[in-house]
Length: 357
Ligand SMILES: C[S@@+](CC[C@H](N)C(=O)[O-])C[C@H]1O[C@@H](n2cnc3c(N)ncnc32)[C@H](O)[C@@H]1O
Image: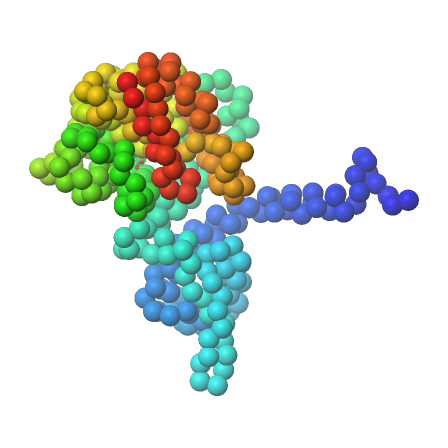
């Protein structure tokens, strides 16, 4: 009879070992991504205008020849993970291997219309990523967020006190908001008939500017912490207001909350939603809160999308926030006094939720 340990076959145990090793070293995935961005490799390939060989890349990067093999190995690994496409190219008499951009690495080309490089730089800065070494300490601290444990203050206070990191965070959020541009081309139903909107926690106004460009008759207010908006100036249909969404929200037909509620506990979300309800118009369909967030749907989403949503949920747990299922969203809306809601798909993992007072 084949040997077994704890009732498990050796093949099953070896699979478990492989899974463990995959996760022990998973941080290297993030660090290789950071390396690609730090070395500007997506821009180098983009400017090259065709797939690039490792020797061309090494010469542009001016790294020592002794490290050429290491560049090749990181490129090969990141190609395996979907960040580059490995293609064969014919050069003079020789056939060589070269690397082309994929949909994911095109999103890292700095200066292009859609670029998530600032998100990579902000999240993988040791300030944020290093905090995750404190998960054990955090779980025993009754109310503190992970950043409360690692940085000594709430995340938003930390940003107030660290202008450089505050800028990096705002740029990261703005880079993500650019993706809304793409989504709004195919989905404008939520904004039809709305004449004014306040983007609560709207950061430096990237989403609001996109909305103003897409719907030129719409007046937009960007509302955020005073430190975020203090030096920003608006246009004729976009203005900036500083304040605290827990105190009051400027009045408008509709309120937009993009990536806000997942940062907060259910209690805090109820308080924010109540302030939003007070702010929006009571005039028919115009008055609504438009939420752009994830909706966890483990039964219907693809395994990979669920994995991303659950990963973000762990990330949010560290801020005492959470990613929510439809049931959890519905409960929040009812408790905050709203009568109905509608969920529509927006991007790969974000939904647009319209909530009616
Ligand atoms: C995760 S970011 C989202 C930014 C933007 N909506 C986006 O998606 O790019 C959360 C935003 O909420 C803002 N914020 C945090 N606390 C706030 C408060 N009490 N009142 C107003 N805004 C706040 C932060 O400054 C930050 O810009």
